[in-house]
Image 1: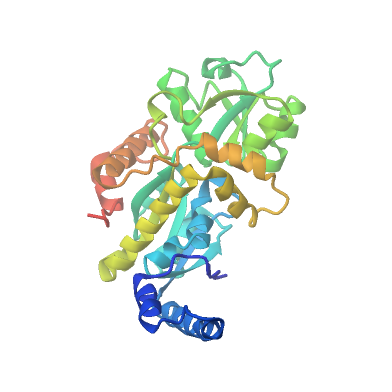
Image 2: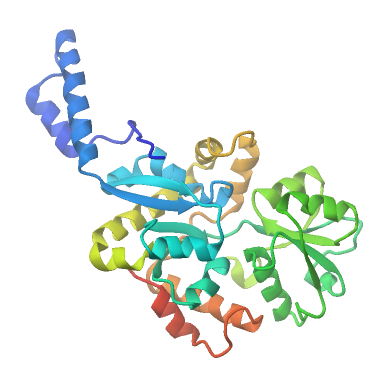
Length: 344
């Protein structure tokens, strides 16, 4: 559904036109100005480039997407964006982008890198932010760090989830075999808390808002998250754009990337307002909790260019270490192939 934001800043051309006509003088003239502005607004809309952007409306980490729509960042960069709430698999999403059913999408690097290895014509253009993945345990479990997971069972929402991949990587780095020293058990995300209460698992790992809400409601201990150690400045959420769009209409890909980066920075500076905007897509969500989640994310950190390409290569190295992508994949060449520096 396309949503138009009439609160977006007026263009320089429109302000100049208003000054030239002098319609601001007098009550009678105000009625005419209203008609003129309506006409101008319609004309401006017709000049916007239509574009479809896929996102997950259930994930608070995608808050900059509706922010960009509501606050006029897409319009500022000449775009009329239709948001597509995509609930299918990552392979289906990337195929939809690659084949033109969608033009771009926002998702998690640790979920996208494996299917991108298969050759989908989708290019990563920017990092959006870091944070939003957490590993929790009960306070009675005795698990206070990742070392405490050895010999335990961890509940995850699926076996290829970004949280499962991330914590498998971090376990590997401290000398714990994530395949043999830890058991992983899959549950629907909404049942992770129940599995923990029943003792079927001793820890759970997932993303916000599900995992944050469970931590608060069940008074759980946050054992680790994806902003620890070397990952404190690493993004997890990324923007991917159809390769053919970049090749044929680089200006549109550039405008989309820039709009989302500006919306991400706005989100970092106005977390409460961003949470309120996102809450329209999450009926029943507590805006206060959404605000706290956004404050815990690193929306000020949104790398582009070579810095972002290097982060992709580092994640590829990480995923090789736990057998998610092929061991003989050259991480630097892979990162160069799936990345596009559209802002250069």
